[in-house]
Image 1: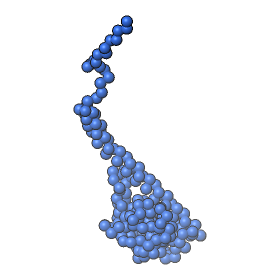
Image 2: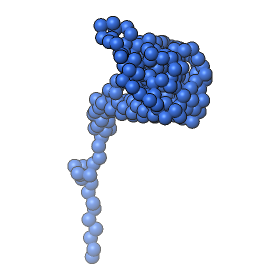
Image 3: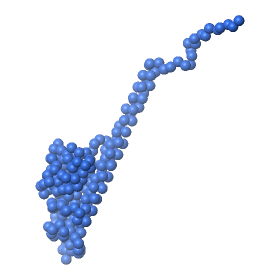
Image 4: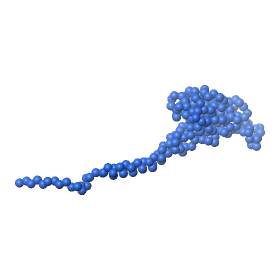
Amino acid sequence: MIQHKQQQNNPTSSESGFTIIESLVAILVAAVLLAAIAPVIVLATATRVQSRRIELATQAAKTYIDGVRTRAIPPPASTSTGVSLNASDAPTVGSLTCNANQYCTVPATPADNLYCIDGDGGGCTIASTKDLIIQAFRYNTASTDAKAGYQLGLRVYRADGFNSDGSLRKAPLKQTTFTGGLGDRKAPLVEMITAIAPQSTSFNDLCNRLKDTGNTTSNTACN
């Protein structure tokens, strides 16, 4: 005769699951850890985006300079009153009318000789976070002819910085690579000065282009 043994429930079985309280404690600990590392993640992401933006601005500036040197891009019409970047005013804010990779027609004042670097394929607009605007100006005390050789200065701004919520800035202010947010839209990403030589260059031409008329103590005769 086969005897059936009744299975008894073991209240202390090791297969019992988490209680609701334990689950809530685990969720709370995870939330605290996420809150602690969130600022680091945000800072790292913002800095990476800003570094990429400055890298693109540097490439745009070098491409513009190469285009001016090879005469593929016309030289800027506006002139500077000195060699330093601080000698020329920052552009005025407002709407932009710019075709891709061309000089803008609006604004068109002499101080706003702006060149559009189209980053999203729709021309440069103040609503874009990818478009870049190059402000270019030249300096030559000896000649007003751009073909005579000159110092070329430029600043690269974000197109969305032209929104009329504040004035654009210039040297010595510049956007930093390390940032915890969207960056300063009003400050230039990159500033550069380089020499654009004429087809025939002499020491006298070079001296006239480089000397600063505002500094009388450093000026010497270019003869």
